Length: 220
Image (cartoon, rainbow, N blue to C red; front, side, top):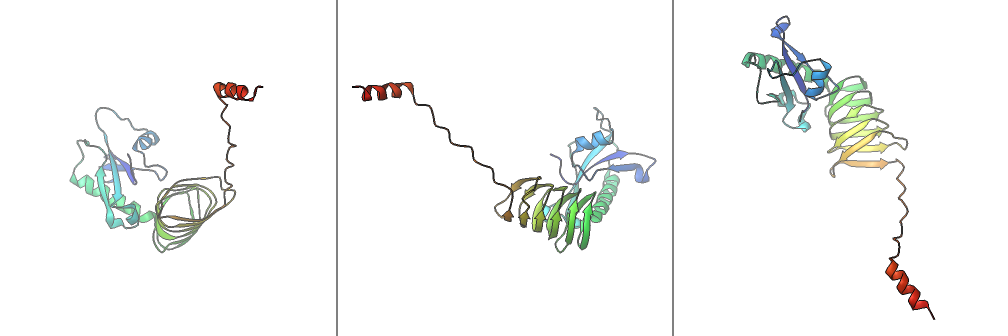
């Protein structure tokens, strides 16, 4: 299964270092990246599927915790230690660019990692790959993939895929998004969504034999 942060490396002699690094803030699927960039996946391997992942998503805000690996047993014949080091450096630069560790008014239109101590007023139409701490006041939309800590004060829309820790203070009554997995170690203070009305209990039909017995017992 593809993991954050996924990318594809293609050979391109016209580019710096002889390679291009292909990725998207919206997906970690190598299959989807192949489709997006119109690559041909044949018997002869012409590109490398890579992942640059932290030792734990709790530490996703620490670039030094990341390591590069190939996401398959085989590799292109042009792959070597020099290219691997180059890809590692490029992925490290990208991860540094998406880490939020200060005061931000709005996160929109990209991929982010929220570090402890960060203060974000609003997030919409974005992907937060990991929230390791900090505070997000309003989430209007987008996706929060992995909440490991911190405080989300007001969830008004979007998708929360996994909440392993931290606190969600308020889910508004008209929330139309999706909350999937909530661990016992996480806390939701107020869930104002309308509770589903339970279906009325249905009475099982009385067996025919019991009906006949009841009629005999009441006959005179």
